Image (cartoon, rainbow, N blue to C red; front, side, top):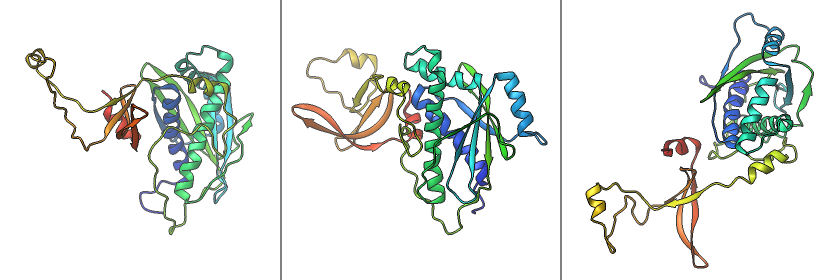
Length: 283
């Protein structure tokens, strides 16, 4: 293990926390701030689980095993206030107000985040990972290292949830060369561990977003704008050989070249922006 490589147990917890935020942003259009924290010294999983359950409602526990050395498994425990809040955000983004779909929607969120985690684990351990289906449990695992996930949306705090890592997760062999990180993209709707596409996800797929193409920008003083007449030429800040930008909801998501398709303008995509690049383009 390299000096800066995270212990596998905490890696699973921290990586899943980051991926959960990405999935929530993809499905709900709003990215929460989430933090994965180790429990206080001496705290037990059973006592912490009981305390959170009493404060935030009965906890749903799901286990996802990983076919890796040490047979690690990650357990996600979300109290009712947590999973109903996360599901409500996603349903609200789709214009759906139906509390009966909250549990199904939470499972969709959980499955997508764990599918992304399996891909990240595949890159870390340099192997193809195919996980079995999620298992629901009536309570927390009897033992295992655990972590708390707390966070906020811009307008509201998020109820805490628990992550427990069981088994004996081992680091990749020293000679293993990690697979390169692919360009960031929206989490796939289906994967080795995903269930059939839900009704909620069908609704989200029908959401329409404005798409525009930018050839460039320029800033003009008001007196220069007033001088514009028919035939005036405005020079943009992009040369003819530079790619144009594809903009969705005021965010640059891709770059490409202009083409003509059956008499209409189009754009051939050359580059998909990663998450950091997309954030930098937001106004």
